Image (cartoon, rainbow, N blue to C red; front, top):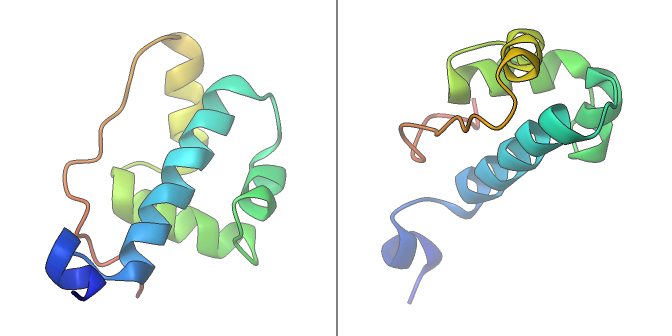
Length: 87
């Protein structure tokens, strides 16, 4: 069976979700810069990373970092894994 038929999302969207979840974890736990996190999670530029991150989470990565620093241990859930993250 095709990936999309099984999981209801494309491979590209699924991989992007995984990359953003990894970025969120690194923001909360690593102390790395956002540029380092963008590179570590496979984004070619901080600009593309920021656009995709904001589209999927509703906030830019810098705000997420600030908010997660203020509320350690809180968990941000994505509301829709089928977002248009590949545009």
